[in-house]
Image (cartoon, rainbow, N blue to C red; front, side, top):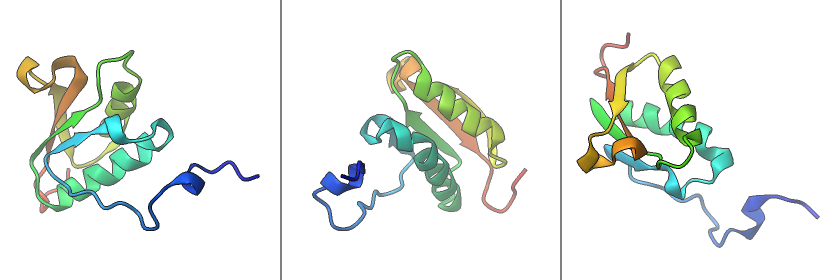
Length: 104
């Protein structure tokens, strides 16, 4: 028996999620977080977003650490900070992206 999480999905096609300036990781299976974050950042940058907020939750910080490692190696990420309390505090990260025509 194959142990593939996609075997039990009720969807025949991939689910398409609109790319906005806020992305919530709570809906992403943990083993897919890295790939999904990388793809989200590339798509958000291509759409021209200069600032995005990624909600990763407070927990023990595993998703936050994964996110910060990805941000550190992504060339078009200028910097990032913990979100202010009204936007998620320790449970979210605000990321500043370079413009699409200038990649550092």
